[in-house]
Structure formats: structure tokens, C-alpha cells
Length: 482
Ligand code: ADP
Ligand code: GLC
Image (tube, rainbow, N blue to C red; front, side, top):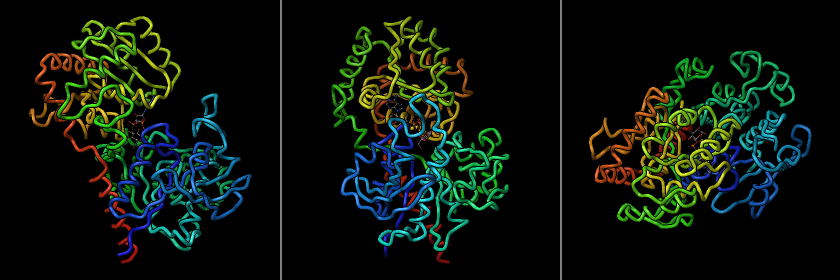
């Protein structure tokens, strides 16, 4: 049988350009799908980092793209097979893919990502004879116009999957954009791309995709409620027949404590004691006394309201009183950055904060912290708790979305299954209780070791999860053939 041919469309991809977990998934899932026999390529924007990484580039198509010239390039970057939308007037900008150096959304983000979807449409309708996809897999709002373009202008029409990584980002633009991006006027209806008088790219995708997935089964349920649906709950309920939650995995080669080049001391399930060298290195790096008896908490996160880290700030008095230490690596909202920096300045022996994006330090925190704290208000999947499980850092997480699906609480599960601490409702009082529970289990060395061992034995790889995507592809491709 001919392998299924899939075009993945995405706005960031590890290791080339990353702001969060979307890039990790976009980088690792195709590798796992390839291993499962799927012929997959990714279409990404030609940011400077992508253009620099692209090898053996070949130009397949040239076309105007909303105010400038564009080219479709095919090439590779390491193990990634890429199509690149080279449109310098849209993407030749430094730094973050979505924000200007001043930290605000680029004013033309609507045009930029409509151009990406438009190019996906071109490939979808057979524009590249060497790669005619059976399926287009669009990720998040930045790629979500693809099913709409195909709906309104498709001769040959591949099936489409839209994966929602985060419903909080919907790509909403004024109605005038319809004309600029070449959608027909008739698309501006409630059954089309219209959303409370504006245009929503994510809604367009949810409306027209043949299958919708999101990144955990619990989040798939949460987003169908009025509260979790962020304005799209009704539409998601209406489409529940094609909506499915598939948990994310992590790249277990990139995140492997036995081979990790970024950490002081490598270790495995059988040499967990060796972790302590990483804990001491982390304590020294942040200017703390190396002290194995202090519960060292780690955080690696975007600093946005989603992540609930203001609740952790509220818990600092508890944390100090109980003799815990905290190291945070994060960037995002100025207010949260300032508050963590101030807490570190006021308590330099117990709290450390590094503001910025630092891949190596993220690995060092996973390898050295005793526990990783993820107090999110909502969390579609979350990847840092999966890395934590693999690195023997015990997760302390709110019981929402993918966090709930991936961490088993010590008080609710038997010893052979427990991997961490969960809490709900998501309040600072409940987080504080969870921190104190962790502190007390931490003092029981054998019990803590059980948690670490169970975590490190958990399968967090993409293998089985990629197969679930392959199933979705086959299912909708089969519907077409019927
Ligand atoms: P989200 O995508 O919502 O930000 P995830 O937990 O799914 O959350 O993924 C976050 C990814 O980004 C993880 O790979 C994490 O290690 C990484 N990350 C987040 N913040 C930083 C940072 N400041 N420095 C380095 N890596 C970070
Ligand atoms: C989003 C979500 C996060 C998820 C990631 C990858 O950024 O916030 O929970 O893990 O996408 O799917």
C-alpha cells in the first residue's frame, strides 16, 4: 500500500525556531510519524533562522503573497523535511516569530499567516507534482485558514486535520482582512469565518477541518464547556463527533538524562543517586548553599496568566518557612518577570530567577531540581512535566488538561503508579497544600525514590501517540474513498 502523504503546516519548529511546546511537537511528531510509515513534510515560514538552517533548497513555485513576492522552497534541515514559504516582506524579521522587538504582535500577523495557509492550499490542490498530500495537518490558528481556503477554493481537496494546541490564541482580525487575504465575501457568515463581527482564523479551521484534535483527552473535554471553550465551546460541541484528544509525547533523544550534553552528571533509572551532582550544580549556579536536604523546586515556563505562576508567588512565604528553594527560568509578561526577580533579590539563598529563554538551563533544571512546579490555570497538554518525569524531577501540578492526564497523585494512586502531586481548585491555598505535601514525602527518602522511579519508567515518547495520529489520518482518508 502506498504510504499516507501528509503536509504538516506550522509556525514554529524545534530545533530551528521555538517559543513553546508547539515547536517541540512540530519537530518531533513528524519524525515519529515517519517511523510509523507516514510520508510527511512540514511547511514553515521562511524566518531568518529557517532560511539559515535550510539545506539543499530548491525553488518549486513563485507567486505574489499579499504585498510582495514569495517563493516555495523545498529542502531539509537536519532530520526535518521542509517546505519553506520564503516571503521576505512577511518573514525576514529577527527574533520571535509573532512579536516585534517591542514585544507586541506584528500588525500584519493576519497577512503573514494567511500567506502560510494560502501556500498550504496551493500544495493541497496539487501545486507540487512531486508531493500531492492526502492529508493536510494544520497546527493552531496560524495554520488554521488552510481548511477554509480548501473549502472555498479547492478543485482537488485533500482531507484536513486541525490540532488545537491552545484555544487561548485564536487569530482574530478585523473583517476587512477577508478581501486582503482572498477569501470570498460569502465566507463572512456565522457558518464561515465570522466571529462576533471579526474574522477568526481558528474558528475557520474548526468549522472546516475534517478532523479536529487537541493535545490531551481532558483538554478535549474542557474546551467543549462554556468556561473552557473560550467563546468556541458551542462550535466545539457541535463538532464533537470529529474531535479527539491525543496526548503529546516528547523527543526522548533530546530529553535523555543518560546522554544529555547540557547537564553536569548524566544518570538513568538505575543511577538516580547521580542526580545529586546536578542538584548541587544548580544550587551553586543560583548562589544557594549546596544542600541535599532542601527541597529544590524548579519552574521552566512562559510567564503568562495561563501558567498560574502568580499563585506560586503567593506561596513564597510558605516556601521560605518550610526551607524549600526555588529556581525559575522563564520569560513573558513584564509584571511577572519583575515580581520573580524581586523575590530572588529579597531571598537570594532560597529563590533564583533567570529571565530569558535558555535551552541548556532548562535541561539543567530538569536534571537537578527535586520537583517541577506547573500550577497552570489551564494546560492543553504541557511538556515540561513530561520532561520532568523522564528526568526524575517529581511534578507538582494543577489537575487540569494534560497535567491531569499525565501525573498520578501519591494520595490517590497506589505506590506502584504514583508519579507526583496534583491539586485542584487552582488556587494559591491548594498549591500551598501540595507544596507542603511534597515537602513531607520528600523527607521519606524511600517514598520519594518510588515517585522518581515510577516517573522515569513512564512512557512519555511519541511512539504510541504518533500511531493515534496515523489512525486519524487513515480514518478521514478512508471516508473520502468511500
Ligand atoms: P507552552 O507551549 O504552553 O509554553 P509546554 O509545556 O507545552 O508549554 O512547552 C514549553 C516548552 O518550552 C518546553 O520545551 C520548555 O522546556 C520550553 N521552555 C519554556 N520556557 C522556556 C525558557 N524560558 N527557556 C527554555 N525553554 C523554555
Ligand atoms: C501549547 C500549550 C501546551 C502544549 C503545547 C504543545 O502551547 O499551551 O499545553 O503542550 O501547546 O501542544
